[in-house]
Image (tube, rainbow, N blue to C red; front, side):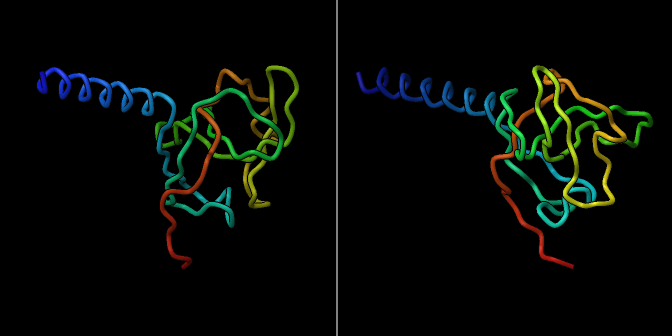
Length: 122
């Protein structure tokens, strides 16, 4: 009987781990576009979602022109209208929708929940 209970608990924990992994992902910030809010090398917890509002920091698929371009970008949402949104980096010298154009919700990975690791300031 205890084996059955232990097996059921193990299966439940395995299912919970899969659900958490499906809902959240860790992303490493590359570059200074979100400085000083987020620094290069910092890891952030991202909740997979397409529900966003202005002011939130999001991760979305980048248009890759070169192999060395990152697959994802981290930016702050400036405006949401229907299925489209615009972004800007917190660093005034970063790319934003002025260069990237209007983005589609379908390109969203999710919303940054919080930093997981914080690198020391240089």
